[in-house]
Amino acid sequence: MQHQAKSIRPFIGAKDFELSRSFYRDLGFQENILSYNLSVFKTEQLAFYLQDAYVKDWVDNTMIFLEVENVNQFWKELVALDLTTKYKNVRIIPVKENDWGKECFIHDPSGILWHIGEFYK
Image (cartoon, rainbow, N blue to C red):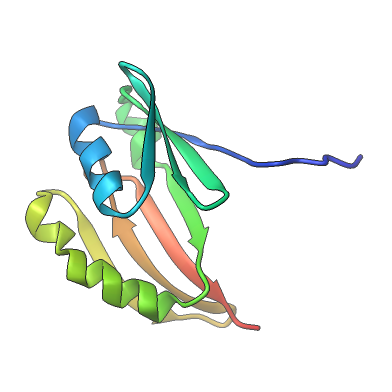
């Protein structure tokens, strides 16, 4: 089966929708409000939906992998944003070397874990 897919857009939840919206804008995503409880956030050709919905087990088990060209550069820019000061529950974890590449981590205000990675070429 050939998909001929154009995009894939996960839906993620938010414990505090307004706070999460602000966080993702600060992280550099462009927001398009779709309704009072749903926005789509984009960067280049990639996107995800943020919804005003919170189910603890769902959010606590959500992880997203974002591949970037240069994870070390991403890390430098991430640290400069000082998101851990601005957002109480946000955590960032420095770049880690793996056998497949490098990655750093971001926990959003709701606890969703983002893996930011770069594969070895």
